[in-house]
Length: 368
Image (cartoon, rainbow, N blue to C red; front, side, top):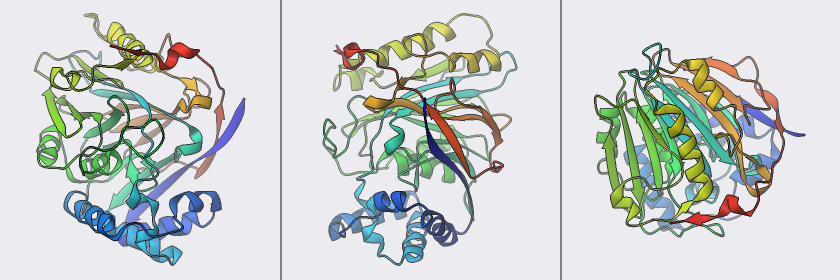
């Protein structure tokens, strides 16, 4: 079994101060600096367009990026974040389990994020920007977020829908100009207090990524937002809804028309969650945790790290208590930590254990 390093950052202050603090942090990690900084400035038109969209939908983030760049004495246009070259959406398993299904009458969200540790930040952040909702979640490309829970009990979690959008081999070229998931998730966490506000915030937002975006709040409201090549469909949970789940394939009829192929392993993970949640029985928090402690194909936790598809973090969110039960890396091989939104962990770095499993060629099989 191999091991890698993961980290925790506590970020508090105004946007510029938080940027400078992250710049000081990253100076201690030359490898990370090499990934975050580009050797040349990105195209000026793209840089300005990206800055404009960030200002409109995730205000404050440009100031954070400026503070980071100033700390490293570089121009912001040399930050890879603006060019989205770090964007490598992986596999995810998402589930919102609502009060009518849980034994304690609370709302839970479970999520596994599957990627390669080599291209994952492996970094959990508590972020408290002045004038914004504080939140706790994992970072993507250092400044974005893949999911999180904010101080109001509003939870957002992302999964790719179909073939991920990006520049890398095997990815789908972007069809429209728009924001990528890591900015969208962070914007929602910092600016919205519940599902209704989240849906409104997304209404006119240009979205460039293909995603299944799960929104849930402490009142038991839930919605799934599915986007594909500029199309967007929102499905809200009804009063009798007991759970909402998503993995990495299209679920809405309007999106299935555009992308009807499914990775077999995405279907297997989806069906595992569905089969374990669709009974009439109430489910306990411990039983939800046990779902995440089972390995694919008999569960949702994946150890295919050598093919860039292993669980790099796992979280069970308790939206009412505003608590996260977190594992860095697979929860099967690593300790689970408890953390309240806005709080800090007793360490800044930790060792994460990685054990690879090869699931054979069918792991990448596409079905219609």
